[in-house]
Image (cartoon, rainbow, N blue to C red):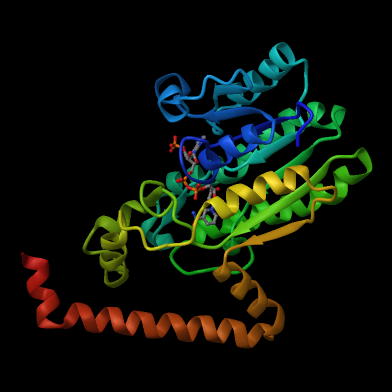
Length: 297
Ligand SMILES: NC(=O)c1ccc[n+]([C@@H]2O[C@H](COP(=O)([O-])OP(=O)(O)OC[C@H]3O[C@@H](n4cnc5c(N)ncnc54)[C@H](OP(=O)(O)O)[C@@H]3O)[C@@H](O)[C@H]2O)c1
């Protein structure tokens, strides 16, 4: 159990972040649950009147919000911060040519610069408390999938960044770790997916993939329980030694194992072959008269 320890989590309006908040409270933690539009949505999301729950406005894209969070901790919690969970993020879907440069930059602003900037701002507090940093990456931070190049790149960046900090902050008593989930049933694949602008244009050279992809949006395809990840956040906050990497989900474990045991060339060949088969099936389905009829309904 916590002895009044304090955790700050980003992106607590839904998904892993939202589920982790009550778990930390149950374990006696003081929780700074941050989100965009905290004033409008905060009280609806968390009805708890627990004085240890602090709902704070924090858009990870806004440096002024990072500074305000640090001030809040100094003023209201006497500078106590034991764990920072960098969880906020979203996915940009679509081929590179279909993405605007603005979309590409925004993906990095939220998933990487938001995480790095907030961490940098809160590090003096974390150092003072010999705290820890948990960065939510993804299995795609280790292996890349097509049509998510920008999202994959942000998670690869988070991996490299976190590994550097793991070594850099160790002598200062700050422990750092990654959580690498596979696909989980959150809002990620529905509300939090942004489609590349050009993918909505039927003349896109990638239209054959875009059409079924866009149809997929809004449909929940993952079935894994997101509580698994929320529980890992709490466990990693309380364990004595934070490992650099913590996988979550059967698919993540499988992909990480294949990555470890298969020679690089074989792994890349398998991915390319698998994609080819999927694309073949998509093309066939789109060409079939039944599908064409459905599309005109
Ligand atoms: N679910 C999965 O399958 C999966 C797999 C691997 C990794 N992940 C990672 O897990 C993390 C959490 O995702 P989730 O699955 O819990 O999805 P989610 O339910 O969509 O939650 C994402 C959270 O991030 C917040 N967010 C987005 N942009 C933000 C910004 N600029 N500032 C502050 N908050 C922002 C969202 O807030 P709003 O409500 O304001 O949009 C939401 O609270 C993400 O980093 C994601 O990349 C998820």
